[in-house]
Length: 82
Image (cartoon, rainbow, N blue to C red; front, top):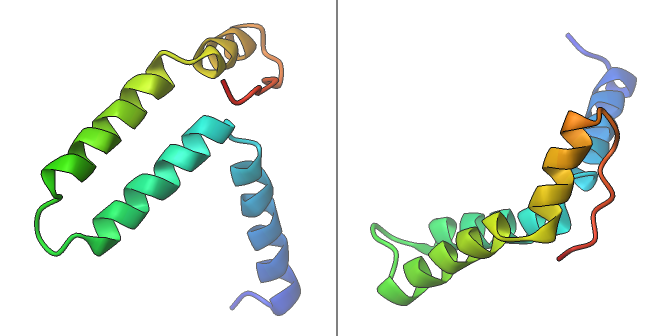
């Protein structure tokens, strides 16, 4: 069984990894999770349209291009939130 110190270390490592993700991705993922948790069975049409637009905007963002460049160049990305 993991000790408190080990669990804390794993939690901090995961939090650091999540914090290094692109800001637009984090915002979009939080919004999707919130919408899904509130939905009883189906998403309302306006919420579904909003989430589709968030996805479209993420795929059209400069951060997506930066992430792909950084991956190809084997370096850490420099997120700008745009």
